[in-house]
Length: 280
Image 1 (cartoon, one colour):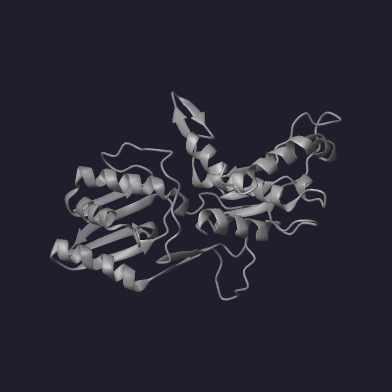
Image 2: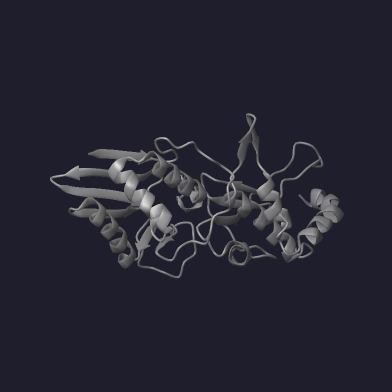
């Protein structure tokens, strides 16, 4: 028996996008971001990100497999980007590798995981596939950040703002999303006709905020709103409807209105857009 399941599809699973936003990150598995692009007061980590696993939870999941398999099982927890579940049988021992998102998963998901690995159960693969779709944010970035991450501005500290937004609105689930001030670019014309105040790169898991917002006259709550909007893009991926990619599906729009000063932020932007364009 040898089987490898790759992200993002499982056999028999029709991919679904735009489901409920991701829940809070389980404490059973924690990723320490790459120290080359984050400012951590820790000096003992080597290059690159690390994961720390709750061994008791890992052993509990391993025991589930042992009871169903009726034989020795070796369970490894990974931080892979593409292969979420792999397994093979070697000399009577079942060796299973699962992504860390499965630690702390609901019983229904864990039961389906065992059935899928041992039986290739079609309905179980559907449950696992849906769970993966709802936890895409737990898969680490597919592309490293090549430019320096700059969070400390002259007027606003993006690191503090992003931490507050993540804790208040996302249950601290998106701590490995980086935030940086973008680069100032000069338009071809003498004056801009439009301006993009924020962007999100899913490949890098990086939010970029336009540096024109790093000014004393720009309120902190508006910068927080821009960060919140881009972090929502991480939590709620685009959906494809009729062959067209919808960046702001209904769930996105609903969640965006949860921002505490949503209306005030929109009013401030409308009243100051000309000044932002002149300053960009």
